Amino acid sequence: MDARKNPFAPGAGTQPPELAGRSGTVTDAEVAIARAKGGLSSKSQLLLGLRGVGKTVLLNRVAEIAQAERCLTVSLEAPEANRLAEMLVPPLRSALFKLSGTEKAKLAAQKTLGVLRSFAAAFKVKVGDVEFGVRPETGTADSGQLEFDLAELLQAVGAAAREDASAFVLLIDEVQYLGSQDLAALIVAVHRVGQKGLPFVLFGAGLPQLAALAGDAKSYAERLFDYPDVGPLTREAAVDAIRAPVRRQGVEIDDQALDLVIETTKGYPYFLQEWGYQTWNVATASPIGAADARLATRGAIERLDRGFFRVRFDRLTPKEKHYMRAMASLGPGPHRSGDIAHALKRPVSSVAPLRGGLLTKGMIYSPQHGDTAFTVPMFDEFMKRTMPGWEP
Ligand SMILES: Nc1ncnc2c1ncn2[C@@H]1O[C@H](COP(=O)(O)OP(=O)(O)O)[C@@H](O)[C@H]1O
Ligand SMILES: [Mg+2]
Image (spheres, rainbow, N blue to C red):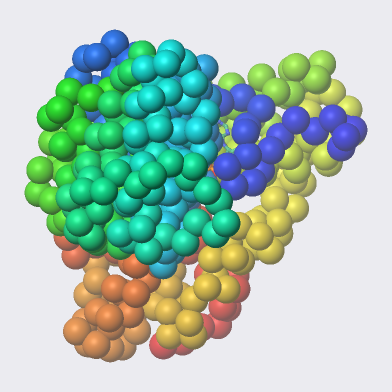
């Protein structure tokens, strides 16, 4: 079919042509935002799932809802090895500048900008040449203790949002990359702002290990958040993800082709986009059939091997590659740590640091104690293709 009309959107955080199977999660987010806005208690949410399941896309959708509701909305992504304070200050500053409702709201925003300025100074956040245009609020959020100051800062922002008859919605992607102190401070802040009854909701997204990281940082995190599970799509949703965009272009795809795509991708959103994309391009006429889907599989895997899988592989040290390859030799997983060590012909204790490093990099996670699994679906097959003939 005409590649110029290909509706599919494989990529990181790229809006899919059809946000299939997520209406429940989106509705829950809508409810949480509406409750916060209405001055009712509202639970923050941490969306958990593997790479490529659509967490970023969901966060973007929630941000749109928050903006449409005129909430004070701040979105950020936790990069590896960066401080929360550094990431938070610039977008928060812009959001506060935009807060322009009543006189009361403007005054509250001014005051909060002063708090933000104190906070930025206390944590030596370089804001370049940007000006706050306000005097610092000395004595608020500037003790230098992040757990304390972040809570004060977020409270001030929540209070400003309340003056504007809205809510403060903070969205943080890749939360698992936050350092343990930052994560602990964030949890404390969410807790405090909630206790004060201020209109605030945090939507975070991260790899599955985030639940354990949050619990380790503060044991009450378990009760503080909802943890929506973002997984592969159900069959029905996967059908929608492929068929709806195709139909909107006036093209049909038959059931056999759909079965093949769903079976191969196991309903993982990123793979559905990739297979949809390739299948569309190889097909020459409507309806798209099973032969097209089969032909597309080769191209799709090649593209994944060069892109989605490859970028992750390239971040591994040689030793880490061996660890991951040993895991792959055991199948898709999860695997017992002992079995992986055994496949490497090494004692468990000697590979523990390697495993720890891979966890931090977000390459693997532990679905439950002693188990290890890939954070990218189908990574085992990729490792075998990339390191054929591997031996420990
Ligand atoms: N519900 C969905 N239905 C169809 N495709 C989706 C859905 N959610 C995400 N995608 C697609 O999956 C890919 C990965 O999405 P992304 O949000 O980057 O995942 P994650 O943040 O979990 O790694 C993108 O190409 C996106 O368009
Ligand atoms: Mg993402």
